[in-house]
Amino acid sequence: LVETPILRVGQHSALGRLGPGWYPPESIEDDAARAFCGDAQCCLQVAPGATGALEVDVHVPHGFTGLGAISAWANGTTAEAEPNDTLWQTLRVDGVRADDEGIVAVRLHAPSWRPHQSVGNWDFRRLAGAVRRVEFVPDHRSTPPAPGGLSVLITTYNRWDILQRTLE
Image: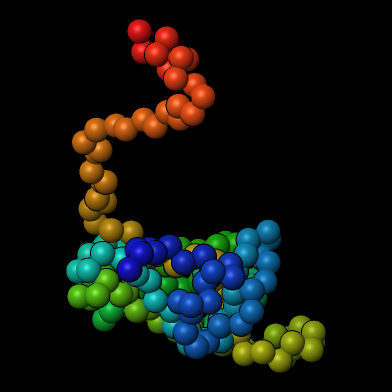
């Protein structure tokens, strides 16, 4: 399988890796993101058995940051943080290990609210915040092997004389 350690949650390409708990994509200050309902799941594909950290960029609107901590769970390892008033806050889970198939299962949990109850905007969704990025950052980045040689393909159809002069 192709390794996909970065999930841009607001992009359409995220659909196959998102589990329950997500709303359709929306824009937050020109960043593509998805709101989540307070209990959302997704997964990443990395190298089997890889170790590293999980980073999640979370947005909680001003006025809702005091409701409680946001927690992120990744293959049994958990971290939590109190939301702050910055536009995007990065929640980091250290000590994450991918399973034998290279899957990092992620679950986000946070207190939720209904926007209409606070601002009267007729939005009755149960929201906990929004996410723009979920990324597995490996402890050791592997470098691709250097090529053993170089092949050059030169088309010679009706160009044999030019090729001979070039190689002389």
